[in-house]
Amino acid sequence: MKPLVAGNWKMNGSLTGLTELELIKVGAPKDVDLLICPPFHLLAPFAAANVLDIGAQDCHALPSGAYTGNISAEMVRDTGAKFVIVGHSERRQYHHESDVDVSLKASAAWRAGLTAIICVGETKEQRVAGEALAVIGEQLEGSVPEGATALNTIIAYEPVWAIGTGLVPSTADVAEMHNFMREALNKRFKQEFRLLYGGSVKPNNAKELMSVPHVNGALVGGASLKAADFLGILGAYN
Ligand code: PGA
Image 1 (cartoon, rainbow, N blue to C red):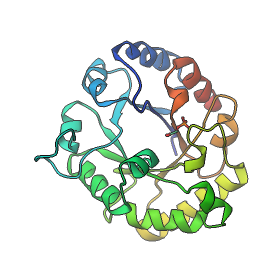
Image 2: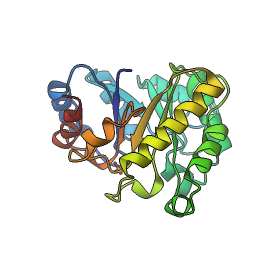
Image 3: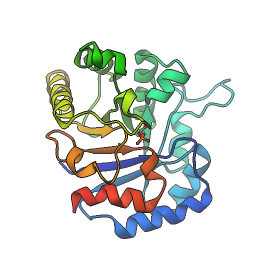
Image 4: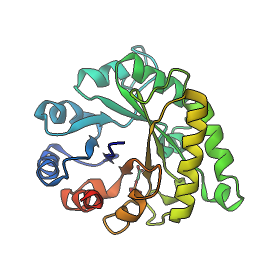
């Protein structure tokens, strides 16, 4: 399966960041799909520049209405973006999004013709308590709607405790989780989804993480802001 390496800029970046996209395009290996998810104000200009595929970091479940400050999946599509991340742990944590909310947003993404990147991940407490597989099983069940296909959906496993902390799970734990997700999704949907790993992916650990079976790419936060770091991660595929 062709890998996808996606960058999530979170609430960072400005128009000058287009230079980073151009550098990434020039330096990236050819057999990897690339995606950058900048904040909303950069979606349209970055998509119009037609350098890399562009995605949003969130969308509302409804197409329009009195929801001050929100952006619908249709509006994301109007910018020229093709993807949208839903259920990122920062949305689940700071905006109290439940699995049901996430599944409605994924359906909204499909309604607008976007590919949904659905994020799941356990907390440190849950991993220590030996509940990681059960938690992810439940999140997949609740956050991935019926109708998911390998074309309209990508799954990102992002342990909450690994995001922005410099901590990463052992390759054995990543292998166990991705194998578990592969089997659960195959059973329910009879499809081979792209399964990304996310959480402190850096140039110095990317090769190891990306070579774990059933890891089909990465969702990268901090190290996606600078082309040099992102290209360092992409070096895992050279
Ligand atoms: P990080 O973020 O790479 O900075 O840990 C990953 C993410 O939140 O997608």
